[in-house]
Image 1 (cartoon, helix red, strand yellow):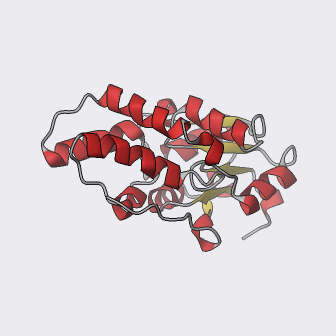
Image 2 (cartoon, rainbow, N blue to C red):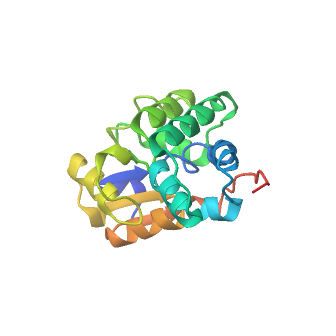
Length: 199
């Protein structure tokens, strides 16, 4: 693969890629799932990495055959997550790439999370304003593993998909990059979040 600085654009996932947020997200999920009597073990949580909150709630409710107010549950989950923001740390090697290439290569964040929550995370880890655009769950109709979010980021940056490099930590995200014809780097090769336990 060519050097990162030769890419048209570099596209970063947020949760688990730029910031070590996954344990905090899982703790927030347990608050919601336990309140509704839903099983949600940590392996399942990681397998759904990259999917929007509302989609996950709808899937779990459908599987369990229960009715859940999806908007309310999503609001509670995101609020619980933000309550833990002070404990979240940047993933050093990835953030270092952002700082090194800022202003030299167009960069975007492509997240299954909400735009406002993503911006709070980026501000917290010192990367507010570091990216040319953020493509969040509100910005496309289809989400990872569909390539649409990455293709939308490439479009906004004027980048050729085959000359984009995606940094990701989830199978769904890597599949989205592959379907979009992009190069990718799996952050799990050098960073794995601590497990919370429970289910």
